[in-house]
Length: 118
Image 1 (cartoon, helix red, strand yellow):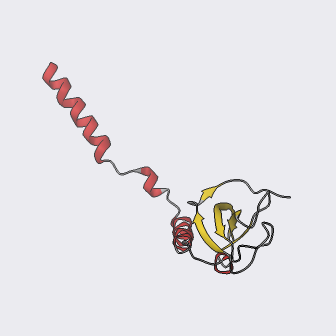
Image 2 (cartoon, one colour; image 1 turned 180 degrees about the vertical axis):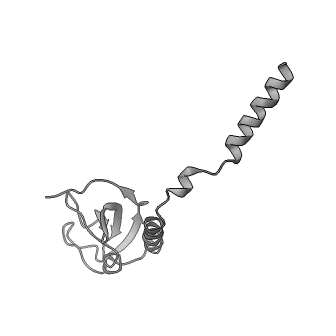
């Protein structure tokens, strides 16, 4: 009897492992493609990218910022954000003056967060 119970439990467990996942049926392929496109765009922004090039994909977010550090939101979805550190174009540049030629020194991974409105 003990062996029969073990066999039945093994068959039931195997059934759960082999059964198709319902989550795969619920994947939104259009949303998945859009997110993939956004991740591809983000990956192309590397140290040395200018502020002008960054602004083709992202736009500024509200909240506190300086020319050296700012949070940006993706142009297609304001909940997708990145934090960016910059190297200023001129050592004499004011901390509040953002120049198109400033370059990215560091960019965070994209993250999700509610919008900030000033």
